[in-house]
Length: 159
Image 1 (cartoon, rainbow, N blue to C red):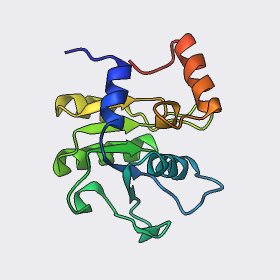
Image 2 (image 1 turned 90 degrees about the vertical axis):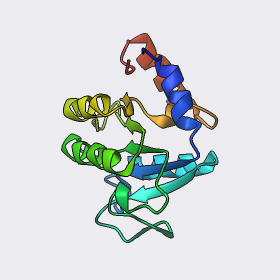
Image 3 (image 1 turned 60 degrees about the vertical axis):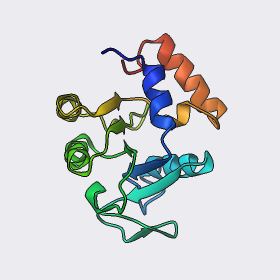
């Protein structure tokens, strides 16, 4: 069954409880996961931080991995290096997470791993392999809206 990117995005953002794997204590060098975490909170989601190196993040308990989160989550935004993305999607399989968004930045790299995308597809996990959740939905800022338009024009949005 083929689903459009817009349908995948709407389904993902309709979920209430979303984890962000890749929040960081170093906001100056690794701000993207932190920005996405704050954006999702601001748009009304219950957001769970995930980083095996942190005990807490912005006053909330931070979990080392997805299976450790009590009650689970409906989806996860992954903001890690591609090799770490592979471990996170395997955790999705173990934790029953059915929706994954692998972040891709225009300038600062990508979390997308072809092996992780293949794992998601083999295990019936819905996957958005690229782009940024901050480009969609309520609260999308002007810069991200322009980025979405430009990437769409250049045919660089995920399929």
